Image (tube, rainbow, N blue to C red; front, top):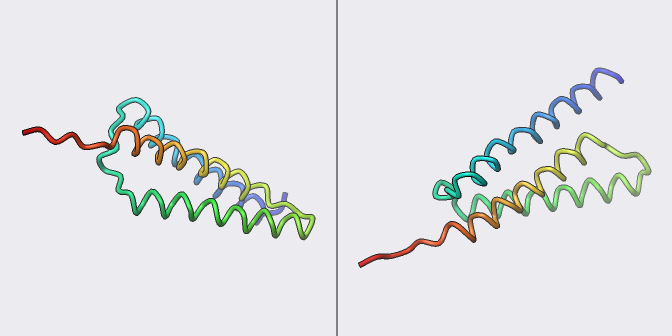
Length: 96
């Protein structure tokens, strides 16, 4: 493994792991009040579209950037859950 490949793996592992504490906290507390829809949707579509771009390029080239695949697949799963949680738990109840 060359130094740049190590840096790629290290950076993408950090990015992949970085979202897990938020998912765990949301799973436990169901508190999604600090998430706003524009942020969640832009993040979700951003990681999805970037993953499609990377996957298409890798398949065309026949060379795979596995650190990026790890990062984007974990983030797609995590943001999908956070969007689901925001939809399910984020409904505001108005009381009189």
